[in-house]
Image (cartoon, rainbow, N blue to C red; front, top):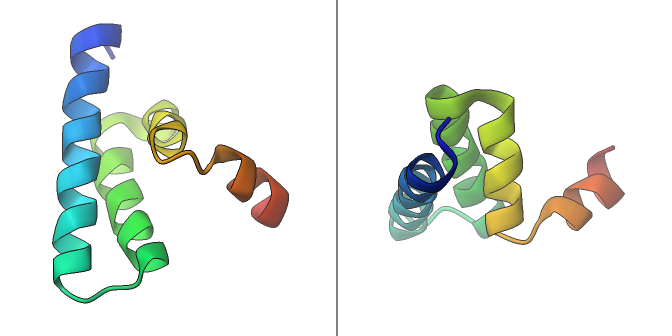
Length: 66
């Protein structure tokens, strides 16, 4: 993943997926899950980590799920 361009494109995909899920009346958690699926399909585990940082959820995920 190219750092600058790749991160911007990945963030755009994540935000679009999140907004689409929220528009479909999904919960915030379900919307984040939908966004992470899109991001993982696009860029793998490193991309998911970036997305969690984008949504400022890395500490929440670490505290709750790891």
